[in-house]
Length: 345
Image (cartoon, rainbow, N blue to C red; front, side):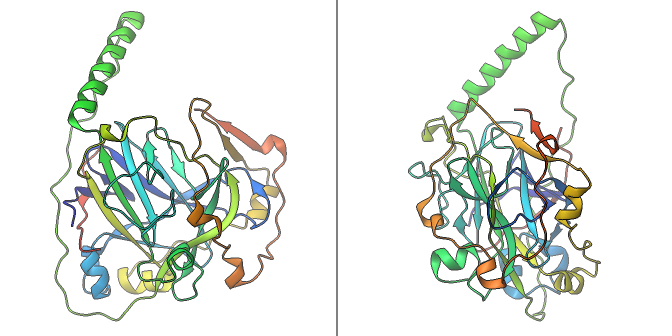
């Protein structure tokens, strides 16, 4: 088990000293065609497993981590931030969302099994290559509709998994020296410096609390939905630049709204907004491009993943494609939070 340093600050996960991950609600895309980036419609609530140790299943308690509620067939995108360069592994049911390979505790380059921060600002789905991803969509375990089920033939894990690596000591020292030189040049040019970062630091890691055996909860995983234009960027650093040990890792359990209510005692978020009504109202969709980055190739294990509609039926909800003027181009201090316990997974 990795020695994770993970905190939960509001609804934001903090891995290590600088990586921040948010879970964003969004419009579910049609499963045909290729679409611009759908909007963010607010954050999913996130709660620590250890705060509900008496109501979660024993296996969730053993894995630690956090809980996130999702409706059947609801879509999600992941928002990333990092103060320093970081390599972030993202898995769905312990299948890498970038390479399609089984979860690994180490970074790999051939194929690449991580995204590079802060260059990768978000990830909306599994890597399908050629400048596209296929949207993350929630489905229950047991149908075979998840990415995990289709790639591995089993649905044993569900949820989402993250592991973050910072730069190794030599590479970080070189990066810091580079940043200092850039700051010196900016200071000389503009005769002023940026304000210092806010004070404060993370609390130490906590451990999951013991409890009795509650009823089993219905687990959720992520399947593949519609296709959108989004690149997953190739790392331009040598693999040796990254630290050998992770800065933090966390298991994210996805739960249905009824299970969320039972486990946490809280009301789940309202059901997702209707995408046709959103587009008809003239609200924006998005396009993002980083001309200095290189997109990864398609991931062979993910190329045969079928959309969730193969199991749940056709997507009959109406869809009005956004007009060109609705697709907007996007341009190219950490408070302390509650520690999130890690476990065996």
